[in-house]
Image (cartoon, rainbow, N blue to C red; front, side, top):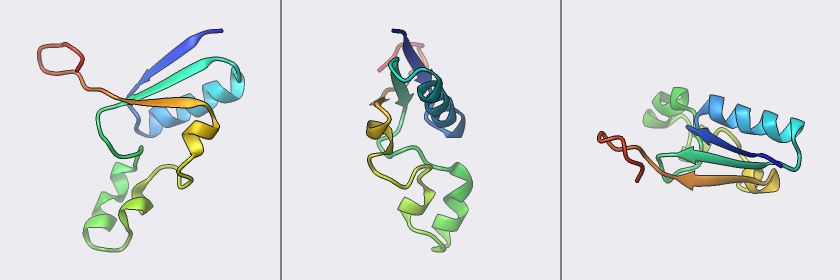
Length: 86
């Protein structure tokens, strides 16, 4: 079993995690992002700001249990300007 660590929980990171899960159902996957919110579409932010959608409408996956159902662990972390992980 291999452990996959994906830095960035934007669309590319989410798709990478889902594809790895599809190909490697028993491997460990950790998706690391720097924000408290679930992975969301930055492209949807203008629609949120003008009131066309709710905050949940920006989320990349609508099911709150999507990542746990796929056994994809989500962690919050960020690299500071000194290069160390927080």
